[in-house]
Image 1 (tube, rainbow, N blue to C red):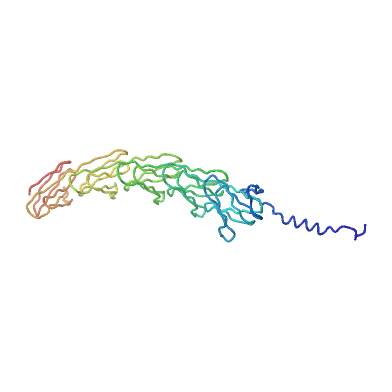
Image 2: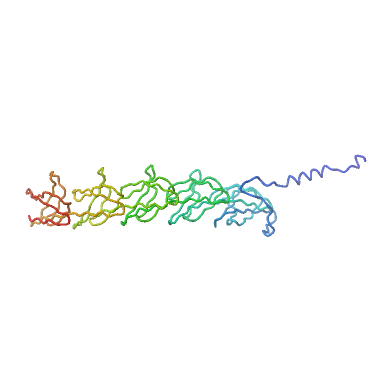
Length: 357
């Protein structure tokens, strides 16, 4: 056969190479699989589809290279796009995908769940402390696999999300029990306030060592996963017949709280000092118990517009009132002064001593 009689093979080879070059190989991606779209999808000519799977009723969003949102769909449903490279977002977590004509690109998410019974929220952050999403406790959030941080009432825990699985956190429920209309506060080891709630209502906290405060009194608590922490506070009531206030101090002399006579205050168990008009009484509080103490009262009657003054045994002035007005004092022996005259006075708890001047 002459050379002129031999078939021309070069164009055929080039054509084959072009065909091969036009075939896109599915990228290697452990999160995604690439397979022919089923005929039931009825894709538009020359387009492909993206499907993101997950266990929540949330949405995924498809963006182009410029950051423009192109389309979106619910998890486990499909979004149709032209062939190309895209970024898919689920709750601000991002994953790159490749879309080919007539190919269904399916990628998997995992989820994060903070379980519990309180009507509160958990928050999810990325490694740069950017907030990604939040949800009520007891409901899950979907994310692409990766490392995240979850916060519940600012108590943190790291979370590693894997495809197709749920990373579950079980916060502890903390309740500080007392019968007053007051609040308790939770702090971390640096003294930063994390959260607060009314007494006898629960707060969800992720596991860790925290500090509870009630009216300036503190107690350490160790929260473990799923635990029900109950901290019983004591209640203090200083009773009296006057419209005055009592004040409570710790052993260092720091004022912790005050209230009107006859109204309760909650404190964590311990030894404190109550003061009324600078008369002092040591008080002891136990958890889940109410400690009641009573003042007496003194009234100095007179027929002029003047004041009377009360002093302790050391001559320290404790308080003063107008004549004919009562003053509350803890039981003890005192002296009363009107103008330049002084008389002794004895106060008994729960009784009123009347002096006629």
